[in-house]
Length: 187
Image (tube, rainbow, N blue to C red; front, side, top):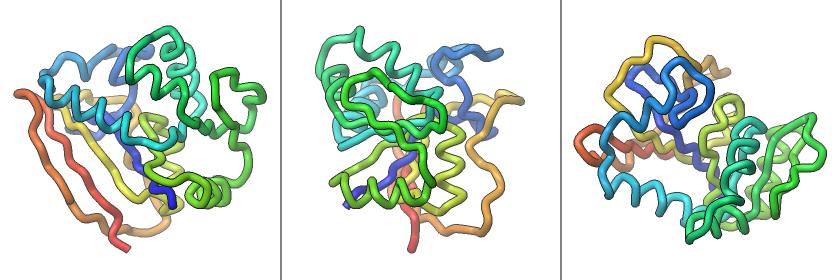
């Protein structure tokens, strides 16, 4: 049975937009802070521990244009693992081992949970993450917090149909500037 895990870099004011280089007023804002070698290892271990990626189209296009050019353990993992991109317009994804999900989000995720054994990681993919949260489809949220208030930009949190309860299962400081919190859905 698959487990949906949303993982985001996030500012103190909840902004998750463009932490690593997209066209944004504060490009690479997350890289201005020290997460130390242990924080880098946390992100690597998180990726290596995933059974599959579930991505929105914009994040998918960024990953698909970058990762095939890299080598090493993490690149090998990303390039070979199953990837699912949610899009109503993408027809030929091109990146190895990628499937397009264009149907009802709740039905597609239910099928993924049945078909994939292990963590289904949702890195970035703001609109997708918001949709998953709105449909109560997320099992775990991993946030790497950075000590900055950006003042504008897309945030993870939007209105949802109802409240949901979460349990803080871990809080770890990495480097001198970042904090990772892990929250599991209380059912």
